[in-house]
Length: 171
Image (tube, rainbow, N blue to C red; front, side, top):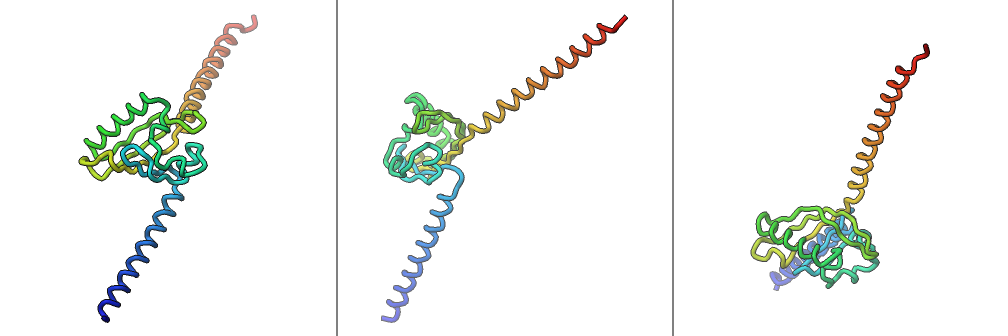
């Protein structure tokens, strides 16, 4: 009898510990500044709050049990990404690439996607997907290039003005 009580207490302690760890993990995932989701056979089964913000949805139910096709701008992109993911998961157990994705309102943004699975034998069955909106990186790179071009123009203009000034010396 006493042994049964101890087993029960140990089981309860383990249960409480497991629930506590689950709650901590859930809080970490929800506080993450990147989109994190669980995808099974290309269907969303769980998403964090950042996924809602990033894609413009209000309820997790909008994602859950929905085909991942909803975040691609076309069926062709959905197929292309699927091939990349499948190949990478089979070869390396991880897929890591940039791709254009679609928000609920139809706007397209550049995203960095990292996908892991349990192993090659069930690579697409259950995956953890991390998505980061990197559109700001592209905008910053574009602005940097434009700034370089603009600086180059001003340098050329200054050199041309100097040459013109030297040609137009008073007699």
